[in-house]
Length: 139
Image (cartoon, rainbow, N blue to C red; front, side, top):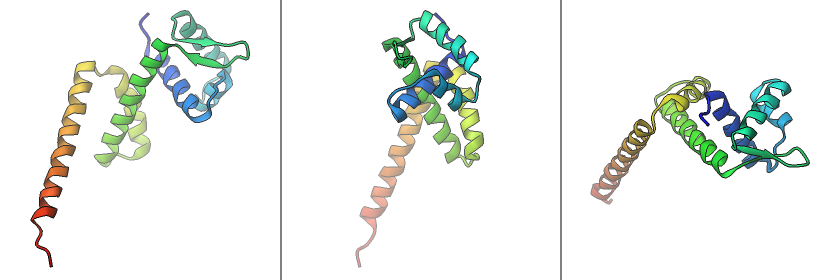
């Protein structure tokens, strides 16, 4: 089943809330996302039908292995793009909103290349700083 951006957002929200609170109900998702409880109900049923999550007898939501994989992927992208945009002096609130858009449309290949480039840049900066410290004369 192909997920739309909204489905990925629901999975990401459930993941984030689970990390924060341990157990997650639909009402928690609605509150966090600022959407109505009926909207969450429709999304939850769609995600359950797609095999991305389950709901136990106490109405707690649980990501399946597939659901967790998708949620982790989207969350990684969200964090990466938010950090990169903030590092480029984008207002943090704008960075959050833009990261949420970018995370859904970028290809896996492009995302992996950007991550590698950012890692290489960071490694080069650390290497240059280490060289600078090493070459600094001691007093």
